[in-house]
Image 1 (cartoon, helix red, strand yellow):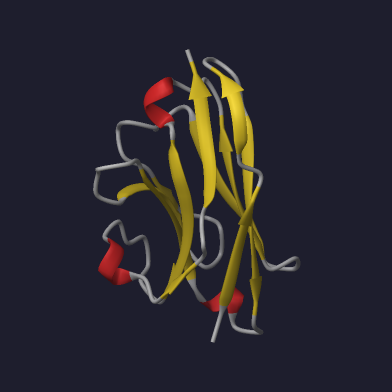
Image 2 (cartoon, rainbow, N blue to C red):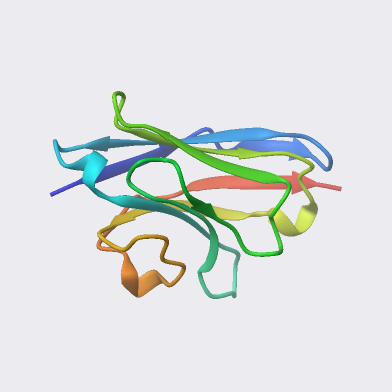
Length: 123
């Protein structure tokens, strides 16, 4: 069992940066791939980034590639999402997720979810 808690969200101006963290409990954290998703009001949950169990492989959709970077520290049971050059359309609740999935980009591939952290980008 893994419990996930996101932090680091907030209000930032367009062009700014934020780093989200996702702290995990449970001894098996390093066995799981981790993903980040986001959901804006009235929209479906959208894939943002994934990192494999080792941290050596990552995957991003075109919408964030080159601006967002996912990483993990298995010694600290934490995964990060560095977000640069933020745009108003990045405004959403951001969720981290864990699963035995490789580099999954679909919500059903993940078994564990955090409660989310709000990111608001003003224009």
